Amino acid sequence: MSFREQQKKANNSAETYWLEQSELVSWYKAPKEVLSTNSNEWTDWYADGELNTSYLALDYHVEQGRGEQTALIYDSPVTGSKQKFSFIELTELVAKFADVLQKQQVVKGDRVLIYMPMIPQAVIAMLACARIGAVHSVVFGGFAAKELAIRIDDAEPKVIVSASCGIEISKVIPYKPLLDNAIELATHKPSSCIIYQREQLTAEMISGRDQDWETQMSSAKGIAAISLKSTDPLYILYTSGTTGKPKGVVRDHGGHAVAMLYSMKNIYGMKAGDTFWAASDVGWVVGHSFIVYGPLMAGCSTILYEGKPVRTPDAGAFWRVCEEYKVNALFSAPTAFRAIAKEDPDAALMENYDLSHLKRLYLAGERLDPATYHWLKEKTQIPVIDHWWQTETGWSIATTPFVDESSEELMLTKAGSSGFPVPGYNVQILDAYGEALPANQQGTVAIKLPMPPGCLTTVYKDEERFKSSYLLTHPGYYVTGDGGYFDEDGYLFIMGRTDDVINVAGHRLSTGEMEESISGHNAVAECAVVGIHDSLKGQVPFGLVVIKNGVTLSDDELVSALKTKVRSDIGAIASLKALIIVERLPKTRSGKILRKTLRQMIDGQDIEIPSTIEDPQVLEELSPRLANLTS
Ligand code: COA
Ligand code: AMP
Image 1 (cartoon, rainbow, N blue to C red):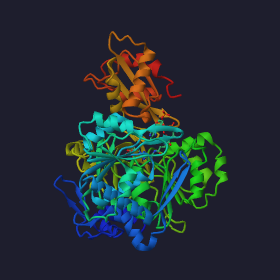
Image 2 (cartoon, rainbow, N blue to C red):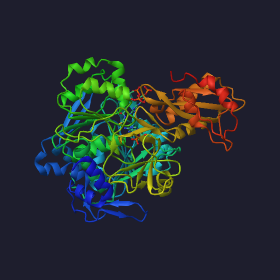
Image 3 (tube, protein in one colour):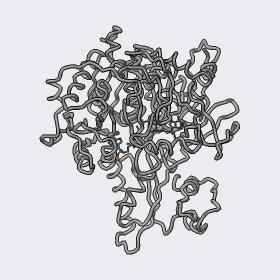
């Protein structure tokens, strides 16, 4: 069936289409019910089906005779180590760690928080949770103690799994003090922490609470995967929303399994035995879906890369990994390739490597800017596919479909576009009143309900927020938070967030969280943070601060103190590019800060001054100070 026919079938006969796709999964109990409405008036997928995600990613392949095949490749230029785990080896480790968790009284439905660098133990911990029906919540290692504490209080984990340190190029980042601090800040206390001691740094353990990973594993025995309901939660992944509090996106087992296998086959064109590399982090959704679950469920070898695109040791690092492991498809963020192109503009380092196995490049996390698209196409001479998705969906909403060269339906990629809606996603561009807009008119990008399998089932413990964030603005639609348009050929262009979420080097951050951190300083009367364009990172945060009367700190001292505060509250990834002290912030008469106008002024765009502005004079005062900030 052609892509267009599949789109039509998924839109018009969702149940039939997704029943057929469910056959990709080896269920314990195959579902008869496909699509049903639950008590929260939301879609349940495959409600009567039973399965286990850890079984599908591991044991299933051993049973299929792929036990000796490499499942996980750990490549760590920052420690100089490499390790391969076959499906048999990984299954044994996961089965044992599941026992370790059970010995810590973790039972089905309990949350386990995983705060770890890019090491195999992070993957093992995730899969072990899935094996026993515990719900994991992985927190990106770059988040600082306060952010971690917020997630601990929301997820209320029985156990936290962590490591002694992370390594950022050559900098050793002690994780344990951050974890201890976070637990101290949090109201909820886990009953135990399991700590993996890395040889680069030994963490101090708290007696009675902390357990050593290796010691626990040495006495563990492997346990089997249990049967779970399709609708049982697999994980909670926190993502930035528009307020200071992150949203806990909940994902189920059954819909997720179908979506992962569907994606690996239809979007990435992968089959068992292939090598798939998502150069991301397990702390982000890309890492969940396409470092861990998708490739392993599809019987592919997956790569866990603890390094950077540049400086570990150079801008040829990605190409080295692709050659060494015969990578068939590489997925990363545009920012990573901008970093590579900046250091190696002629891609001279690429010449050193045999990339003959690499068939396609996939990009996501932010819009693939046309300059980087053209650079990649010219240098690699393979299809460069921008595809759009978000933590909430867990897999691609739009892509340019993978087709083999013999197909008549060859769909070419178009610079700046993330392609066409994937079957199952009925994407519409809406105006402020919820009316569909014609081609080439930009509006709110929304998805007509129902969403396909694999998308979020709720916001953890906050059904109201789930509804208000995504469903209430335009009844009958899921609102993505992105703005964009379809062109006359049906290509979708995603042009950026319409809310206060920004994308910094492929990391999704909330300006609201940064504002909360800045406002927490006792010299600050009020502040605004906006994302501004950056040629490497896509966007970077920029702050404007109004200070209280009587503050004795100099402006320089205050700016430096506030930058440090944001880094220590949220993490180094939230480094403010600049911060200026101003007399007043531009606001509407009802007191709303005009963030969009600020962004437009900084980016040198035409300014839309709302009729509700309190005092237009404020913009005139700010104008000279905001000009040229991004140049
Ligand atoms: N743990 C601890 N600290 C971390 C971290 C982690 N997991 N990840 C990043 N940081 C720190 C960095 O060390 C850096 O700290 P510094 O300011 O003290 O030097 C800070 O956060 C900013 O890091 P980063 O945003 O990575 O910027 P960079 O200048 O070090 O590197 C890139 C720039 C483009 C090379 C890098 O951002 C990159 O590889 N981006 C791709 C991201 C990606 O794959 N995202 C997933 C999308 S699918
Ligand atoms: P995250 O939830 O961290 O994956 O971030 C999701 C957001 O990143 C989306 O809502 C978009 O704003 C942006 N994004 C991700 N992929 C793309 C893409 N291919 N094109 C444009 N924006 C993207």
